[in-house]
Amino acid sequence: MNHSIIRAMTNSTILVINQYYRPDVASSGQLLAELCEFLSSSGMTIHVITGQPSYTSDAPSVLPQEISNGVIIHRVSLGKSIGKNTLITRFSGYLKFLLRSCILASKIARTTNPDAVMTLSNPPIVGLIGGFVAKRRKIPFIYILYDIHPEILIATKWMKIPRIIIKLWNLLNYLIFRSAGTIIVPSETMKATLVSSKSLNKDKIRVIPNWARPEIKKQLYPTSMKGTIGIPLQDIMLLYAGNIGIMQQLDPILDAACKLKNTPVHFVFIGEGEKKAELVGRVKLEGLVNVHFLPYQPEEQFAQIVLESDACFVTLHPGLDSYSAPSRAYTFLSAGTAIITIMPKDAELAKLITSEQCGWNVTTSEQLIQLLENLLHNRGEYVLKGNKAESLYSGHYKNHIIMHRYLKVLKEQI
Image (cartoon, rainbow, N blue to C red):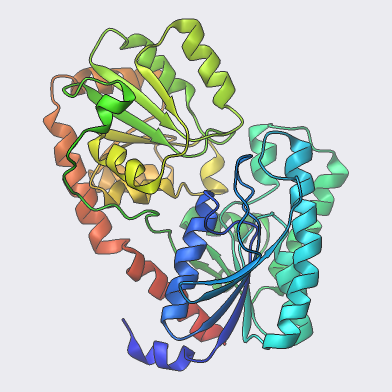
C-alpha cells in the first residue's frame, strides 16, 4: 500500500451515487460496497446515495440511513418498483431513483461539501446526476462504466428501441462523458470502443479490471453441497453463476447437457434473469436431469459450490466484448477453479484465460461437447488449470491490488 497516497487522501469527502449497493445482490452494488469500505478505511469520508434493495422482487427493505463499515449510506425509496420481472417495473424503478437521488444528492452536497463525485452506471444515465452535482460544486466527477448502452441493447436485439430514443440516449451519454474528469472501464476493449465510437480522448479513460466478489479461499467443508443439490459426490460438476440474461450464451451449455446426459457430468445454474424461464422450459421439455437450477445463494454456500465445481462457465455473445466485461470470472480465478469461456476467441477474457492456461475457450456447442468428452478421461486437467487460475489471481487481481488503483485515480483528481 502506498502510504503517501493514503495520507494525501485523509479527510477527503467523496459522494457516491448508484442504484445498487449491498445488501442488493447486483454485482455492481457488491463491488461498490467493498470499494467504498476500502476508501473509508483509507481515511476518506464516503457518502453513498443508493436505492432500497431492488435487484430482485423479494429484496427486503433496510434502514433508510445507516453507517456500515465506516460508509455513510443514504437510501431512497423506490416504492413498489422492485425486481426486474417486467420492463415497466424496471423503468419505473430507474425513474424513481433518478428523481429522488438527484434531490438528495443536491442536499447532501450542500451540507457535506464533497471533494469529488463518483457514480457507476446503474441506471445507465445516473452519471447525469454526478455531472450536475460536480458542475454546481466545481468538483471532479469520476464515472465508472461497467456496460456501454444503448449499444448492448441494440446488439442483442432484446428490445426494439425507436431511433429518437437512441439519439437521445447517445446525447445524454455525451453529456456524461464530457462532464467526467476521468472515466473508468474494466477492459482495454471497452476503452477502445469509447475512443473509436464516442470520440473520447484516450487519456481521459482509465482501465481498472474488477476483482473477485466474493474473493474465495480454498477450505474444507464437513459436508458436500453436491449432495444437497442432488449430484453424486464422484460426478463432475460444472457451474454457471451470474445473470441469466440477454448478454450470455447459455444454449451451448444445454446442448452439451443434452449430449452428455448419460454421463457423470452435471450442470448447475445459479442466478436469475430474463432468459431463465426459457432455459428452465427447455430443460423440462428435453428431460435434462443432469441440469440443476438454484436461486441466488448465501455467500458461504455459493463459495462452497464454486470450490466443489470442476470448472465454471463465463459466457458472452459475439460482439459484446466491446461493450462489457464479465466480472464473475475473477471470483472463479480467486477460488482456483478452472474456467470455460464461451465467446469469440479474440475476446479479451478468452485470450487471458487461454494464454495463462487457466482454462479453455470454445465458440460453439460442438467444441464444448468435444472438450467435455475429452475431460471425462482427463479430470486432472481441471485441477491443473485451476491451480494456474489461483496463481494468476493472487499476482494480479486481488482486491487490495485493484482498489489501490482506484485510490490513485482519486488522488489525481482531487
